[in-house]
Length: 409
Image 1 (cartoon, rainbow, N blue to C red):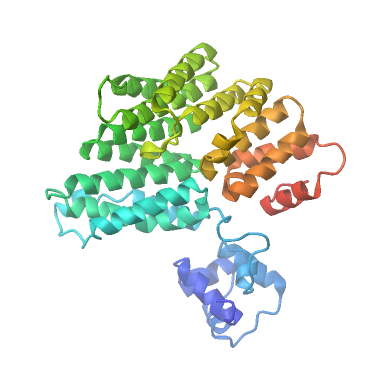
Image 2: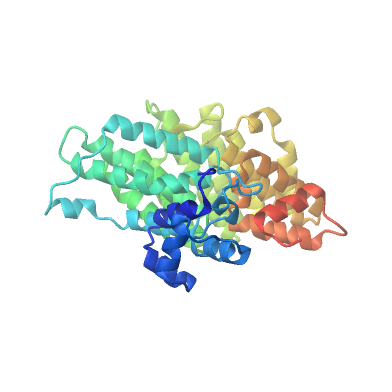
């Protein structure tokens, strides 16, 4: 792409955005002939104002249009644009199963390939690479849906449903992070039904947390609390269960998400009860684990305890919990979890008026998983608050981060 003439790059990105020359011309206020000449290199683009207008219509960083890397924005840090949102929405709105009742389903990818793709998507999520994941989601969703439909009634029925349930959960999680809350709820809701068809109670339990988190993000905290607690009660491990570690992890994870929902309602008593239950479950595991992608264990309980304190406005308590974390155990956690915690702590430090330390927390999170800081709406709000309350000039590192995120200093 870098060595192509600018006209060819315009053509490439226009086609990638699925725009005809006529539609593109209409949005620019130009003629179709003008667009055709630009793309063929017959007409030069010698005005920066026109180049910027083209980049705006294509929803593209102008540096890419000029054949350069976007300034300070590597691919892993790019977030999501409305074209990609529309593609994910289109994939989520498919109803392959009912279509297969009338037409032969498309050739599905092999289960083994789908399993590798799902595993790769989980790893991408756990490392906080949300932009990369968002761009892969449409195809991943379509492939998983096609597999679920095509393998229905075969020996692979449950495996295909299990994989689709995972993909819906991944989609819900990343969409919630990026602020696409309605789509996050839709994907989470789909994951519940599919997980039940997979015949896996624990997968359905984790799917419940995705639904609850989407509800919480939409401000429906009481509903989120109830759904987490109800399913946690049903999954409470029984003695001698040979899948105790898996079950303990999912059960404890449900309690943690319930505690977060309770903190959002201001119900500190329920929050403490649920955190105590999660702490007991974590002790039963004997260490930090990642069964069913929960990252559940003693360290994650403390991380959630700090986050819940922040939601209650108890920044001092959150800071005390943060200071008491075992450094080795915390550093062993996945990048997404640690960066998320740093964002929570940035909020906690602002609550006690320590904006300098809050800025440091944002920078720490950005080093670990840039998208967790640069792509999340809440991080933009926190950074804006930190800059507004900073006396004098912010540090060079914080000013640079603000510039990269488009937050005014």
